[in-house]
Amino acid sequence: MKSTQNEKISQIKTWILVVGIDVAKEIHYARAFDYRGIELAKLLKFSNTAEGFQRLEQWMQDICRQHNKADIIVGFEPTGHYWFTLGDHLKKQGHRLAIVNPFHVKRTKELDDNSPTKNDRKDPKTIAMLVKDGRYREVYIPEDLYQELREAVAERDRLVQRMTSINNQVDRWLDIHFPEYQTIFSDWQGKAALLTLRHFPTPEKIVSAGPEKIEAIWKASMKRSAGLKKAQGLVTVAKESIGRKTGLVAAEASLQNLLTEHKLYREQYEQLEQLMMDLLKQVPNAEKLLDIKGVGLITAAAFVGEVGNISRFQDPRQIQKLAGFNLVENSSGKHNGKTRISRRGRRRLRHGLFMAMITILATNQEFRMLHQKNLTREKNPLTKMQSIIALCGKLIRVFYGLLRNGTDYSADKMLSDIELGMRTAA
Image (cartoon, rainbow, N blue to C red; front, side, top):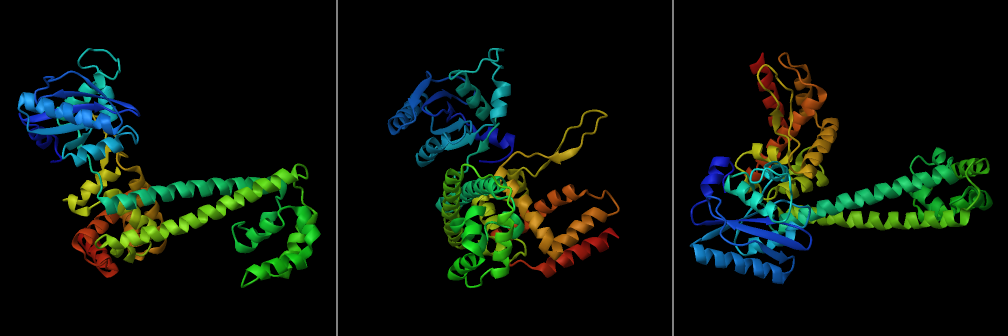
């Protein structure tokens, strides 16, 4: 289906059945209309089960036969994750899917009855009318490979959140029971630091073990030991520790549980990274993204997983809008509002590109030059944040070219384009 509203409206022909569905966790509600908004059947209430889906399918097919409809377009709100199974079923049946903005549903629900009432009978009609009027966007359900990447990136985010939570809890534990520990080890996740917490978690046990025994533990498990001097320093601060001395048995058990969780999540994270690399290699031209200095596995996998098959886009600006990086302004009459990004789109894609650009600016010469050019140009110089957002758009265009055309990334070409732009401006 086309992307402009006029083109979307033109898709709703006389032989199209427009179905609006209010999606919930257990029970869905559906209403059916023709291209003019005339209701063609009674409200359908069906369950979120295989039997319920069959009932919906039979209901729609009966209406098509009764009213000479040849095609069906189904619209719904993206209500959390509840629409995923229904969307997969409808796609398998060959129906066209449309998503409407929940904000639009909220604003237009009063058109029929001039009432802010929201209920299961009213919402399906509002959704169907938005679809009829072309106020929807296509539903893109990724193919298997892209869906695998999308799920892998989402799982990575979950693991990172869990590990961050555990890191904070271990830091809290140390602040309470051994605040001097991090004067010896700047990072408790280092090998020697972790071994020490496993074997001698409290100041009392460190003092009791002594520096020689602590160093022996390190040597037995590490190719390169932290050394006797560090062990002696650890014993010294342990003797003078101000950490709490009560409740240590339960506190030690809590710390060991946290360390066990940390190890488990770290192993899962490493396995997931390998899976992401294996999946990325299967996507045509995706490995070319890694040739850009500063772009790592996570950035490439997140971009490909969130965008999906690059061939469905005719212009990189479509991806920019998908990420919420398209510019919007609020102006009226003599008032000229500030231009900003819309922030409407795939949040994970937008966040991934922004964080990637921070890393790229620290390591990539050509992008640093572009950034400096944006900050110092004579006409309309950008702020640092504005420049970063503009460079995210540039990165999208580079990714688009590499994936769609299969060309290799060239730092020299980027630099020559920058120099050409500077000469033209001069």
